[in-house]
Image (cartoon, rainbow, N blue to C red; front, side, top):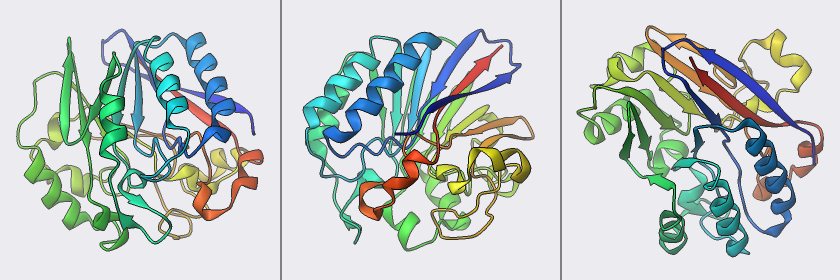
Length: 272
């Protein structure tokens, strides 16, 4: 297992809150628990107000040793409220991407105190509103993350939004992190912060990230030097934090040796 690094982002919005983002956990079985427990201890040290998991909590709909994941999430939620949205890996089984949704597991997760699982839903807490978008499986694997598809789907699901500090959990940043798409969303001008993952840092080593400035070596779409693979950016009044994730490779693509070459990332967003 590689080391765990912390990335800090300061956003001046006159809200005194600290948010931790841990994306792309890709839990599959008990072999991941040692790493996740180290992540848990690191987060305890940070003392956040909220923890956001923007998708790919699990590696596919079928997992093993699920009681260990439930126990880990329960312990995580003892730190503070945990907000979870759905990525692409929750929606299929096996590398052939057979559509499957583990309803039983999701209901168990929803039953954990202090955990809020947002499936095209929102959750408000004080002056902050969290929104979790679940994009269909075909968006990722048939439509190649097409922006027109994204806009139509998003606008069907979200037509109104609370007048609060709105945080969108959107697993993939590929469409949402562009001005052209943001301006075509019905609630686009009211989204203050977007947290994403999905890109696995573009499989970019830490020492190259400052040089490449958000570009990845290769994206999940198998495109070279794609934008918006990690880091912070701002479009008009919307802030974006794209996490490189906890796990570099899932069990189905057999690239676990990368986990020892790349760091797991805990993103810390300081809303000042």
